Length: 212
Image (cartoon, rainbow, N blue to C red; front, side):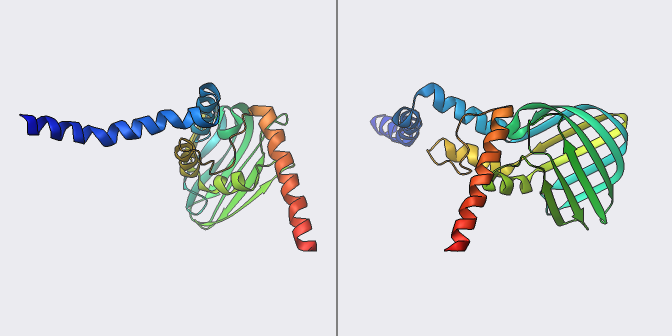
């Protein structure tokens, strides 16, 4: 019986140690509330989910920007959750021919996100153009890895996408590693402006580096 009890306590030791580390991490660098808010923001960055209004007949399935298949065409006025920018209303255009071309673009009625248009030739060669407001360099990188689909049938439209790179940022954040350097707490309009400033700073740094 003594042997069994000893074995049981030893098996619990790694679990208790890991749990203790998870408790200490948020207390070491900042308040628990701010730490948890950052982890929550990282988690909601992982998802796009929007609907329900659209017009046309269209479907698109993508496994990152490197594997996209689209067919048909549609216009949409979708409300929902859009990753790092939170809840928004967006006006979108989707069109495509399977394994030939896929077009995905949207705009917002105010400076609330990073409007873009992506064009995929064949199933895997994608170019992405942003308007004035755009994510920072690491956010722009993560945008290439959305996985999911969009469908419009007559007047109904739905989109759901998941981003594994943003999810990796969520996981590493628990251990103090801000993979995408996006832990400053900004939402919606404020986050769009922050992204714009970050990108402008990135351009200035690139110019200085090229001049040296």
